[in-house]
Length: 234
Image 1 (cartoon, rainbow, N blue to C red):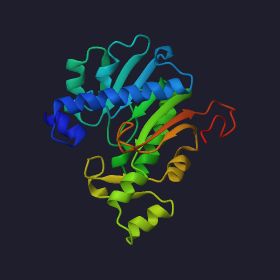
Image 2: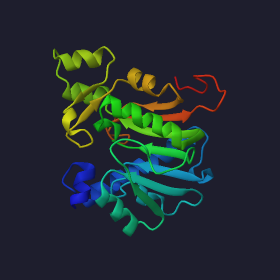
Image 3: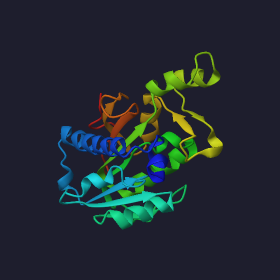
């Protein structure tokens, strides 16, 4: 239960935990399918911030790709390796690099990870994702956007003014990497952060009825020689 609480930040209720993991896995698959990509056609997938396998456990019957995981918490990594035989997890530090070769993955997803990082670390991990993803590979991430900002950043405060002007706002930076640190990022800022090497393929604003309140982004790593913005979502 303790590991579930660390991942979900709730009561650790097993039924809710498993249901949310299943919904996340389903949305990743459907997002790819809407853009003409089947998970089974891939060779390797990385779950960054895999925790204790909330999403990863749902890939056990998927044939085709090899599924890898990476997490800052060693206990989470050990649990995954003991209990999810089709999943290969390693431990990462708070900052890059990862323990993988260049251009290793067709898909990398990071759910509720950037939401707890400062801007310098978000930038560093963006560059690392660029390194380990294959050209044409996909990046699926979640961010706390307008829905979270409206609830947390009070009107009239400097933080809300900064967010409304298109800036990223990070609270409790001294405990970054934990659920107590919160990053709030407008869509325009997120698109700008990833524009160096990625094109936005699909954006879904935060809505608990879809998956959870965080904004959902599917990016594709630009191939060599491909002009910026090709295939970009509107």
